[in-house]
Length: 120
Image (tube, one colour):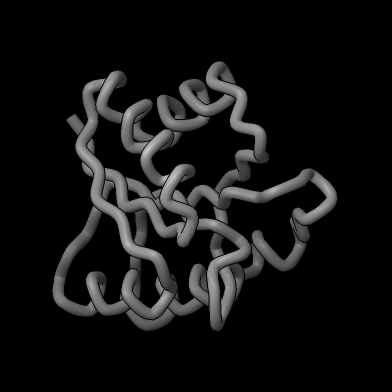
């Protein structure tokens, strides 16, 4: 059983993802901002993976991922959640430390296979 941090400010998205993770046998907790996620990592929380919205308020997903890697030496998977495939900036994401992307609407098969790959 893995623990996954969901960083997204849309309650319905968080609820849907948390339910899918629960059905996969994983635990989750969520925060709505990059700052809150960084605070958790700063306090010593080290989830097995992070699902990070690219469109979170304030600093955004790319900057948040970069700070997770640089400031907190977070070494597990960071999987970005993108509203549309057109929103994905792969070179910037890779440079920031993002490992994979899942787009909306969330395809359950892709979601499960991506999580299984990075949590194994």
